[in-house]
Image (cartoon, rainbow, N blue to C red; front, side, top):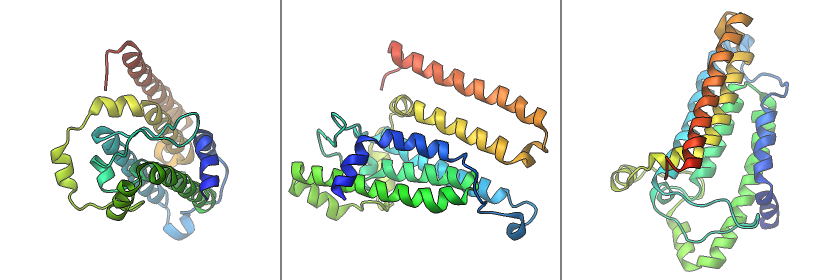
Length: 240
């Protein structure tokens, strides 16, 4: 598993591109009018949005309170220090948990049985392998310190014990969250917009004109915001 994890760690960014494109693969529906009634589409929309927004909220809280560099070094697992504060005090892999919820949420939102039933389990297997590879590196580098951290904090399931104290005792760095997440946020919001407008014509009364009008407004607005944040970052007018 460690060997598998090291391999996928090297190519993990390509994995996200594949999973994003896979949202639009034709698939049998999870929620159908035969089982959930005429307004069946509200089930994937509401559940999907709640799950995916929860994932982004976890990522936002993690990055805003205590960020950890997950980029590795020379496409290999690497860490300069063991970060245990912030959300890392409640879950050892909160960024990965956030990613899983974001992808699971958009999979539910797209009402794709293939995505949720096949690709998400495959993604979980790959993530488990990556985490085991990271843990192997951290255990070799930090030894007893990392073992004590593992005994105290769950690998996957976040603990809410003391969470209010965590937020009270730390400053939330909104700029860091924006600068680290604006690429992810842009792709994520574009994907949600496309799924809602193309997958659910009921939301626009099956009017292509209304759908296209919304696309012409929402997508350029998201692009303008994205380019503005990128400009602020490149010019140093917004710093973390």
